[in-house]
Amino acid sequence: MSTVLWAHHLAGQACLSDETDLPALYRDLDRLDRICVSLAVTPLSEMVDHTDAQVNMDALDLPAEMPSTTELMVRDGRWIGSDAAIDTLERLHRHLTEAAPRIGMMRDRRPQILAELEGSLRFARTHRAGGTKFNFTVVM
Image (cartoon, rainbow, N blue to C red):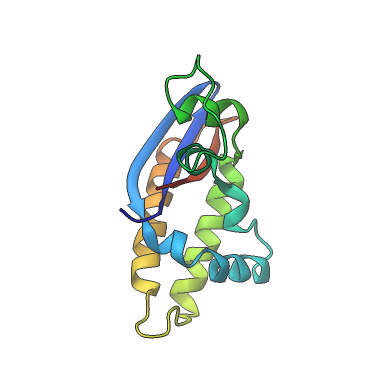
């Protein structure tokens, strides 16, 4: 099993998960962060939560009263406002489409990254509402 990202939305205490694996976004997170910085938008890493990975690696204990890492992420996780997340995802997608930078040494992974960004944008836009939050979580 590989390490991937999953997208989540938080409305109050209700967390909705898109459990579509996003391996390219995870693998190229550092490169995508550098692009985000050049675009003056929130770096993707600032919307990535590590709660699930930390529990799975025994670096963080899951409280006995919580049945899953989702509840812990809702309470203590890293979140960003949905509007800011959508702005970042849209501008990153536009840049990757228009400037077409090559991402990857052996083969260009940009098509896979674009597809994952498109899916994440659909999810984020569908569940956008006033006051909602968004994140990607590292899943192992």
